[in-house]
Figure (cartoon, helix red, strand yellow):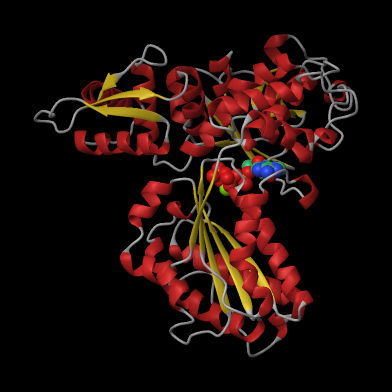
Length: 488
Ligand SMILES: Nc1ncnc2c1ncn2[C@@H]1O[C@H](COP(=O)(O)OP(=O)(O)OP(=O)(O)O)[C@@H](O)[C@H]1O
Ligand SMILES: [Mg+2]
């Protein structure tokens, strides 16, 4: 297997190529297909991340040497007119937010005092994935800042994704620089000699919070701090303590509201220490999952992502129904519609039907799963792979010992170090916590330690595709050139 990198408009892509002796490849990207000659690509020495959506295919041995990319570009049926509406990264404008009035009201009332230059509440928002937690909190906090400004109160909000900023140094640096950059845009503070931002490296997290208080206190009466996916932040208690005590400790006069978001309610709550609980206080809101009707409304409101007449009669209904099947995840519903459209386009079909949605289901599930396991350590991915290979279908179970025995071979095969039984047992617990597996304790354990039976919450093929997408070493073991091959 040879590994290559390619710089494209969408960023760096990594992929692997099995066949030798070819000089041209066609890459199907997420949004387009491109041909490249191999000598223009940068070869890598192993350890590459396979881009799950890029497929490399040899040109020489398929006899398509007369192929030109011009045959592809601009020649597929027009399916989308505004694809960003069904891209989950896009934050929709107010008119596209459907329902959630009660949740919006609760969050707005907790933050509202900021617009009167008074003390707001801190809040914690819980709920399963894709229930609108990030959307509602970002939307309401921006509105609060806008309304405060209209009242002559200077307020702003800052959003930290703790998945991408998972240490308190990174999180506090992001907090600082988000506020700093916004102030620079508004008032050009970079040019002011009295303000010099701390260096981006080599200083501890407290430097960033101290400097943050300086600029916030000078410029703002109110500040909303959103810490999204807070459970993924290491040592979050220390940061929360510092943020929630700042006013009390006379470090700042600005009124601050801290909004914590998590989809791991119990685990997060259990890990918050008593000191933080008492200084944070505030209200808790739990966002419920959407039902099929609500998901259908959300999708209907984005129908104009597609060209008129392209969507079949029950395409939206089917996507809503499939997404409601598991737990009512709006992200999944949107992704299903997006992938169904992509599938139609790739097949040169002029309409997107409910069959496309059904076909897209496995791809979307594997994609969402690979995003959620991407936060796991590499060894956990090996354990998940081993567990999946040991099972004969969904509903089958396998014991910790059985997983461990096979794991040792897998770890050696991919030239990884081999962890002890207890560590592997802990990683299996992490997988259960993430919701990928379910485990049940079996007996009292033996000399190796606790024994459990484990099963998957998804079909094995889906977990396998997701695991392979996340770990290229496993693709070599399975001899596939694309994780998607597993699903076909
Ligand atoms: N009520 C809604 N109206 C319109 N779009 C919505 C609604 N709820 C969620 N969405 C869309 O669904 C996707 C997922 O929503 P969001 O990111 O807010 O979920 P979340 O609860 O934060 O999930 P996670 O726990 O996985 O972070 C986003 O693209 C969002 O725009
Ligand atoms: Mg979120």
